[in-house]
Length: 359
Image (cartoon, rainbow, N blue to C red; front, side, top):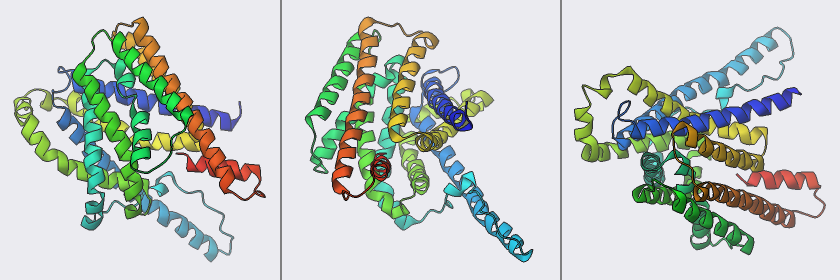
């Protein structure tokens, strides 16, 4: 096996491990009162703090990594040697974490959507079985297409509508087959899907405010979220937190699990980028679909969720429809990019352009 194949396999395996572990650990934090407390807003708020702190630490490392190559080059020039190109450090991608009020204000509408997204996502995970989690949140692409059509004026092809139909059918089949069906958990999943779609739209609008830097946006979003969560936590969960001061909040297990979950929440962004770079956007979506299937099947055993025929068919119908949607959108983007490029452009360059535009 070549070194490149080993690298790709390790990146994909890391993505699977981080993603599945994050979901399972958050499920424990949201629903296991022996380990955690019934305060999902507080748990989510703490994870935002951890993410913001990691952004600060990564930014500091990034500053040092930018200074190091120039120092090596200066030494080489003084000794009369040619300075060999220095491979960028992993931390070079992280900008210095600075909080400017003017920028934070421009990002604030996105942060409100972001808070809604992660709150309803964790509430969904708290109230539904892990095996049903992917089904409950499966309508994100439906909302994506709806908002793209209504807000952005992007036309929708009949192939896309057919894919959405498959996903919707899978959603209802999975709901019918769920033995411990939770209406409030399913509604939370729908709200999470809605906010995920809005988050992607607003992200594109505000990225120029942070020089199109994803990590700078992550820092601002999480700092803003920390501020937004304070009144919500105080109002809805203040008494719960006070009651747990001498119980879970004094245990190392609780804070360790909370911190690790926050670290996984930050890490999923890194491993997602690594997987896309190591493979392709299409391969990343295929990997994510396969991971979701394995995650759901493992949940039947690990969490003791009872499997039903409708439930399993619903899971694979949703995932199959999502995968078909990925193929359809990739093909549509490829055709659009090919028609917008000059005829003399080599096919390889056209494919690279179309791939880079689909993230």
